[in-house]
Each structure stands twice: as structure tokens, then as C-alpha cells.
Image (cartoon, rainbow, N blue to C red; front, side, top):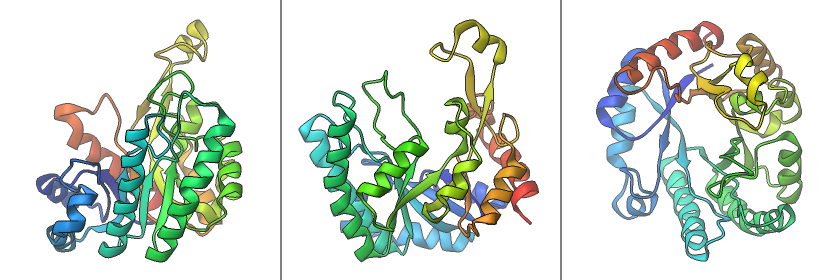
Length: 284
């Protein structure tokens, strides 16, 4: 399987990552970034395409962090417009996927959120189909239900089913990340078989659980889990590989580096260690 990495458009970092052996990238295209979708639609993205081509990096996805169901009308309007722009940009660039969140109004009830999702992403799915682009939801709760900044409905298998039922378009799928299932106490292998046809991208990130801390504070406490590089946590990576092989997954395995140990000046060290660990499991 192809091994990639999620990163911003930073030429020196991309050169370093290509030198480590990565062959695919998920480029964060947030508003105001070097890859702002609205600006790039007007100005073009030839520099991005050219650099990645020269480095042997396939652009597997553009990452979109906005919340299309936000409670604030102004934020919601801009987010929907930005989704439209990034889907158009991905189609123009020949990028097959846009990753992001299904959206959430943290102040509203579940049924209201689902209705808003159906209306919003029903329209966006039609645009994605026309552009030959997939919308891929990462399954991160972003603090739901306690955080007012929560922005994603797509974080449990139960919700996956409901989202796909309400918007059945094949253009809607998952960026499957097992790390978020681990700390939610959800089986991180079994959903791969059920949702195989919807998994268009795969995030490689691990979760470490401090069981002594968990026994002291419980699941609603803090500090009992943290994200780690693949192989430094709870995930059975061989089982992940087997499950992905069973569904004939043909996409990339994309590192999402959020390990606090290998941060700041050790960040690139972490990238290199993760590549070695992922190649050992998936590079066969």
C-alpha cells in the first residue's frame, strides 16, 4: 500500500518527507493557508502540482477543516461556500478526495443536525459527483458533546450508517482513523468490513491509554489517553492491514502525526519513525 502523510503546503517539509520515502500527501487546504481554496481557484495551483510531481508525491487529498453546519449563520455560510470552492479546486487539480468533517451545530439536537446535514451535503455530494471527487469524513468527535467547538457528526459506526442513509451518494465516504475509535472504546477493526466500500482514505495514528489514570478518573476524566505514532499505542496494525486487504482497499495509508512526544524540534524525527513503522506493516 502507498504510504502518505498529512501536511501543509510547505516546500521544505515536502522535500524532507519525500526524502524519507513518503509517496503521497494529504495537503491541508484551510482558509487563509498557502493552499486557500478560494484564492487558488482564482490564481491557480501549478506551483503545488509541479513541486509534488517533481518530488514524486501524489496528492491523494485536500484537507478541509471548516464546519458546514456551524450554529453561527455567517460561519456556516462561509463554510458551505468554502466546501464548494475546495471541491471545485480538487476537481481542477485532479485530486480524488477532499477530507473533512460532516459538520455539527453543538448547540442543536441530533435530529436537527442530521436534517441540516442531509440538506447541505446532499447538495455538496452532487457537486462532488460532477467533479469526480469524493468527500471523506474523518471520524473525530472534536470534543463532542462537551465542547462548543465540536464540528463533526461522523464519529461512530451508528452515525456513519445514518449519514450514508440520509445522503446515499457514493461520493460521500470516510477517512477512516482507528485512533479515535480506540479512545471511544469502539472496536477499531470490525467497522472496516461493514463500511469498506465507503473508506476512500485511511489515517494512520495510534492511541495510548494510561490504564492507571483511567481507573482513577474514569472515561469522563482527562489525561488517560493521548495520540501516538503508529506502533506506540493500542492499535493492532497487523489486524488493520488484514481488514483493509480483505476489502481490497486501494488507497493510501496516510500518517496523521499528532504525537506530543515527537513534537516541535522532534517532529520530523517522528515522521521518519512513523514511515519505518508503517512500511513494515503496509509496504508489502
